[in-house]
Length: 174
Image 1 (tube, rainbow, N blue to C red):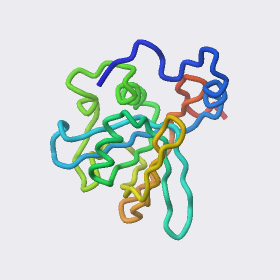
Image 2 (tube, one colour):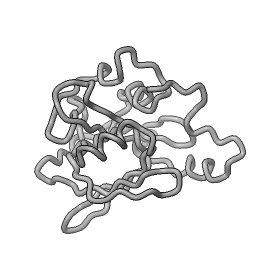
Image 3 (cartoon, rainbow, N blue to C red):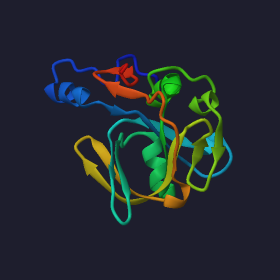
């Protein structure tokens, strides 16, 4: 993993990046890999996601085609999708490659192997997914995944980790 000196969502004079930063959304962690060792795992912080409801629900994600996650998902065809909470913001930065993670980002949380990849033990909402299709879209790779309803867990969402305009947020006070 490379730690980048610049912010991954720096806008400079790019109006498309500025518009994307205003969309905002939940910060998610996608993990994949077989086996019980972090050496065989990959993960990536992703905020470009969409859940499509239907008889077979699908999760769609835009991921960096050069990421380790893209390679491992291509090999295994499966992944684990986690919604992150406010206390996961350092973990999110490590998986995004903007913060150091000595020994790797999987050392920053309680991960356990599953059939689809490592599961973050303190995530309150998560699901295992199976890749249905992969397409190149712009400078990203679009993963269209079917949701394994048998593994779907939707827990308390007291302090969701949100991302808008280059900053992490939680829900505004009510």
